[in-house]
Structure formats: structure tokens, C-alpha cells
Length: 246
Picture 1 (cartoon, rainbow, N blue to C red):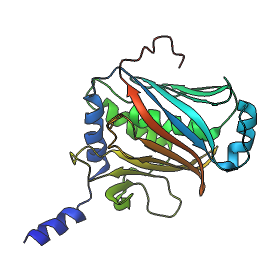
Picture 2 (cartoon, helix red, strand yellow):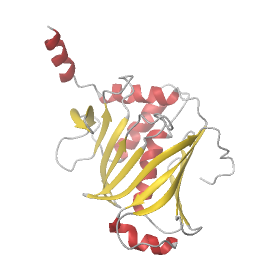
Picture 3 (cartoon, rainbow, N blue to C red):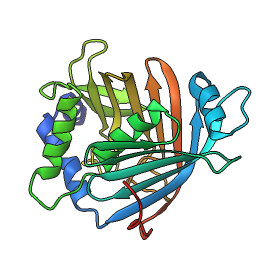
Picture 4 (cartoon, helix red, strand yellow):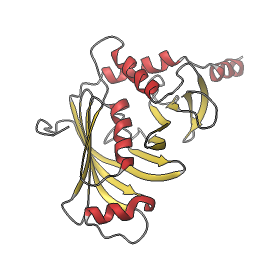
């Protein structure tokens, strides 16, 4: 009987509305008003050469290492700064409720990373259903078919994939078996837009320094190639972001 119950539980596919509602509830319960996350960035060789030159960094091969700082003012305002270890030059991308801004040299993967981080981790509202609806609007803008849900496995964990199953279809994946089990944390979002075909992966929500405010690691792939990896090392919920330009 227990095996039958377990099999039925695994076979059950939750509707998109329920998945997004449960995750949205955890975001609305956050007491944070701002968040500053410091860490590192690794820019893949495929895009490292030109960026290193623009930032005044020495690069010959391998990943280009940079410092990274993510700033969030809830709801909906985000900024990502990538800086060289060898100069005072910085690449900045920002988003204020969907309005993008950039300073310094261009790295498209940085803007893609920020767009998705902001869409899923800077959402927060006091209105019933507003956060869930905002996430659903974002998925629909990426052309994710929110009427289709299936089981997937990602990073060794079971989860749900929202979107059509066909190869190359836009999809949003969530982790299913986190603790507590009803948080349904973002795992992956795949889509194609005017900038290219993207796969943004959110990895590890077990870090004591950032908990589940943001993932410890974010990877951005363009096509099959990794372009950018962000790693969070510390977080400050009391950072003064009043003068930060988003």
C-alpha cells in the first residue's frame, strides 16, 4: 500500500497556478526590503577576450574572473555590477520593474542573468495573487506554455517543468523536493528572444549565507555554451541602497 501511495504521489502533476502560488507565498512572506549579495563571476572563454580588454584585465585563456555584486530593492529593482580585479572598471546592468539600463562594456549574458534573477527573486507584494500573476506574466512573455506541466529531474532532484515538452520549447523548471516541500524554488528557465537562445540555471539554495533569498550559483548558457557563472559568497540585508541607481 505504501508503495502504491508513493507511486501515486510521484505521478501527480500539480497545475501551474498551484506551483506559482506556493512559491509566490514564500516571497511575499519575506521581511526583507533590500538585499546586497557579494560574490564572484566567471566569464567563459567564448566571450572573455573582448570583455577583459574593455575592463583592463589580463586574460590569455580559461575563464575571466571578476567580482560580482547583486543589489535588490523589493519589489522589482535590481542591479548587477561585475568588476575587474586589476582596474577600477565596472560593467553594470540594472532593471527597474522591467526597464533595463546598462553602463560600461556589454555582456549580454549579464543582462539575461539579471532579468531572470529580478523576475523570480525580486518579486514581492502585499496584494493577494499579485506576485503569482507577475511571475506568470513573465513566463508568458518568454512564450512558456503555462498550461502544460510535466515531471523532470534537475541536479539530482525531482521537479516540475512548466511548458511544452517539444525540444527547444520555452520552459520553466522548479525544484519539487526542497525542505519544506512546498516552496517550489526556481531551478531553470529556457527561452529564445532577440538576444539568442538561453538556459539560465539556479543552483543550490542551501547556503547559510544567502539561504533561499537567491541561489548560491547562477549559470547562463547561450545555446549549448556556458557564458557566465555567478557565485554568491555573502549577503547583507541591512545594506544602504538608497543612493544606488537602478
